Amino acid sequence: MDQHAHPDHACGHGRADLVARAERLCRERGLQFTPLRQRTLEVIAAEARPLGAYDIAERLSLPGRRVAAVSVYRALDFLTENGLVHRLASRNAFVPCDHSHSGGESAVFLICRACGAVDETTSTEIERGLDRTLAQAGFRPASRIVEIEGECGACQGREGAEG
Image (cartoon, rainbow, N blue to C red; front, side, top):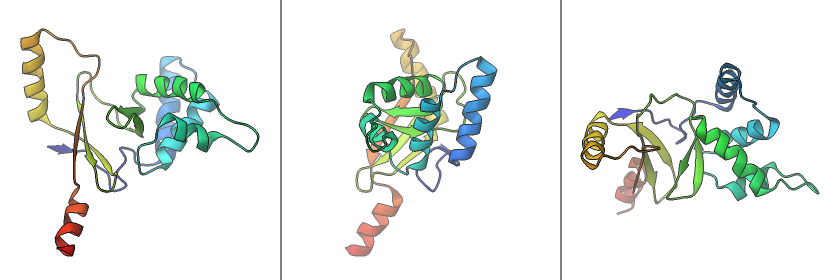
């Protein structure tokens, strides 16, 4: 597997890098990077764990000034469509991504059930198998995200040390 995993268990290298990439992408594509979209991206990038829309709305809200979840969902749709965040269907939560995936490239997420860590990787073996399966079925996917749940190496190491 080609690793894109990062020690903080998020796909991104840092909030500033991710925001700069988002600003550049929006400028190049003629898209608006609104304050809510930016703040939503910053909240996701600041976390080491996947966040749901309601968690994001809570973090964006100020005393006496709630941010509506529907507004967060619109920002998340924009960020997902433009490859700045990934949605983990099994968690209905979002993680940052600060690298561009080539067209048709699958993202493989390794999700630890014990600690909640999420690492992103790619795999040429999975790509080839998935391509064959899709071609045989005559199916054209809208997205190619694979989620694998289990235990990360750190949690496995803790189990071994405790046993």
